[in-house]
Amino acid sequence: MESPLTPGLVEELKKISQLNIEEQKKVLPAFLKKLTPEQIEYIKKQQGQEQGGCLFCSMINGDIPIKKIYEDDGLLAFLDIRPANLGHALLIPKEHIQFSTQLDNTKIFDIANKIAKSIYENLKKDTNIFVANGVNAGQRLDHLAVHIIPRDKDDGVSIGWQGKEVKEEELNRLVSLLSIKAEKKEKPKVEEHAEEIYYDDMRIP
Ligand SMILES: [Zn+2]
Image 1 (tube, rainbow, N blue to C red):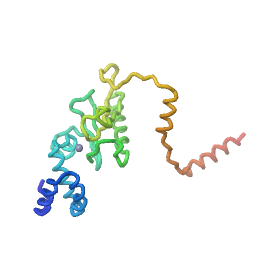
Image 2 (cartoon, helix red, strand yellow):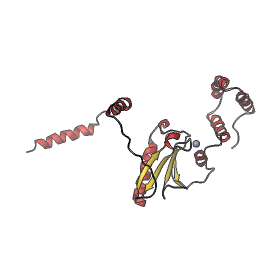
Image 3 (cartoon, rainbow, N blue to C red):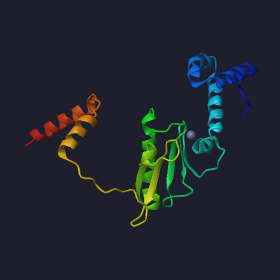
Image 4 (cartoon, rainbow, N blue to C red):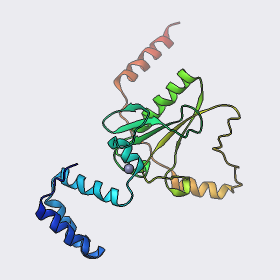
């Protein structure tokens, strides 16, 4: 890829990279404002390569061949070449983000569901849909991936746990800590009609 940076910008970038992090934080916003989106993308990519790169980003860029089963503007799915079971698919966002909580929409889960459906219909297998958010959850790369894993009885794949003992007060504490309010939806008009029809039917002797 040819550099979209002018010699002047390269010089400025070099000077900034020699500053310590605190000083960099002060001057970077003004510097980034001068750049086009392509130039910012180019710098990000270069930094990625310096840090050893990202395997999934290399797959998205076409630098590493994959066995693709789905692609759209924001998502890519391919077969794992070291599968838990045959048909094990990986679905990743094209944007380099680490956690599913950083997604700005949840289309990835719709597509994961479609892949699970395809596995069920074409391979006649049950599935696990699995996301590891963070190292403690078993995440190996810092690029989000949804695993869709076909399952067989006694296939030796373990995604399991022993249920722990927990006191009721602790459960109650967690309920108040973790409860999420449902978004209010306006009742669709069709439903109102459906209710009317229902009540009318009830009146028919
Ligand atoms: Zn990546």
